[in-house]
Image 1: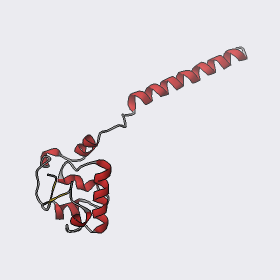
Image 2 (image 1 turned 45 degrees about the horizontal axis):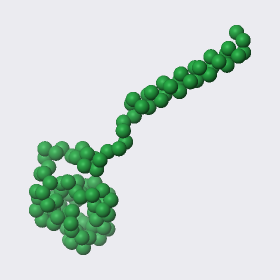
Image 3 (image 1 turned 180 degrees about the horizontal axis):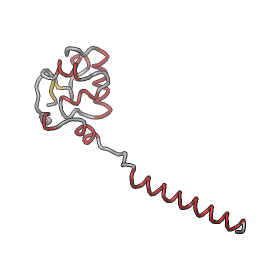
Image 4 (image 1 turned 120 degrees about the horizontal axis):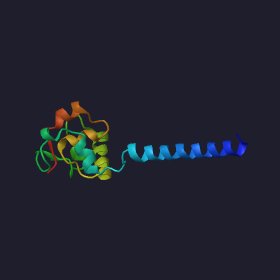
Length: 119
């Protein structure tokens, strides 16, 4: 086999593998664009969560950091994180969404869930 034929076969093989790789990437890599609402809704079992507008107590969508810091287990640092999270991602869709804030886990949420709402 001539050297030019081997080079041609090599180039065609490389092109074929590139095409297969691109096809795989286009087919099996999910779309990374997710709306905030979908991101938040997918994190929780929505059957257990009251719809937007329900809940009582402090409205975590409008309260300032000083009011949020009065909640049990929420100090100055976490209250500023809640406000920053709300400003970056938009309003909380339900009270359980507050667990998306770094530093607020299930234990802290259990302490405050009856004292917050998303009116």
